[in-house]
Image (cartoon, rainbow, N blue to C red; front, side):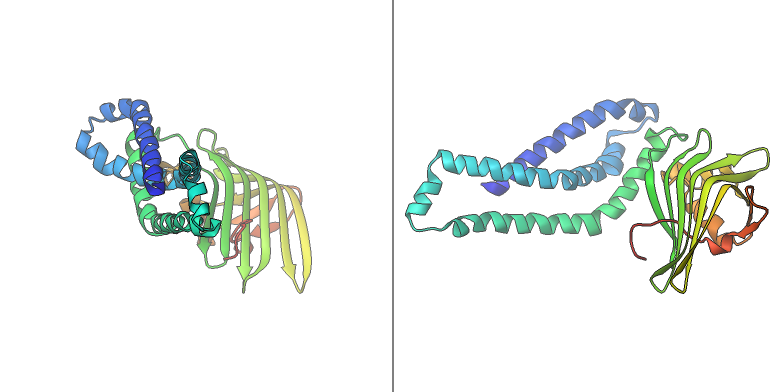
Length: 275
C-alpha cells in the first residue's frame, strides 16, 4: 500500500508538471517545428527522471502520512498491537520501502541523471532559451588539480561578473586565494577589470594579505569570446575561464599600487570543498 501511494502521488505530480511545462514551452517547440517524437525522446524522457528524483523525498513523506492515516482509520494499527506486534515490527515495511526508494534515488543521482541532464540542458539551450540569457549562479570549477574557481554570477548583457574568487591548493593545503567583488570587461583597453581585490597567501603558517582597489589582468580572451565558448551551454564563463587561468600569458597591474602581479600565483578561487 505504501509503495502504491508513493508511486501514485509522484506519478500524478510529474504528469501535472509535464502539462504545465508543455504549456509554457509550446511556443518554443512550434517555433522550431519540433515533432512530438523529437520533443519526447530528446526532452521529456530526461525531464521526467530529473523531477521524479527531485521530488521523491517529499512524496516519501506524504506517502507515509497517507498510509499511516488509512491504517489508523481502519483500526488496523490497534489490531496489530493487540495481536502482539510491536511498533518496530509494524515499521519494518516502511523502512524496507524507504531503503528501496533510497537505493533507486542513489542510482538515478549518480549514474542516470548526469548524462540525462546534459542532454536536457543541451536541448533547452538549443531550442528554448535566448542565447543571451544566463540562469547560472554559484558556479564552481576545478581548472587543474588543486586549482579551483568560483563565480557567484555573470551577466552577458554588460559583461560583468560578481564575487570572483580563486584558490590554489598544494598537498591539500590552501596556499593562495584571490577574491574580487566584481569582474568587468573593458572594451576601451580590451581587458578585464577586477575591483575590490584581496590577495591572501600562506607560507610557514603565516598569512600575507594584500588589498587593491582595482586590477587590470591583461589577456587575449574577450568577453564576447568568453560567452561564445561557454555561455550558450549554460556554463557561462567557466570553461573559458579555465583556459584563461591556464594560459600563463597574462599579467595584472595594480592601480592602487605600482606593482605587477602574475596570474601564475592565483590559479583558482574560494571553493567550499577540498580538492
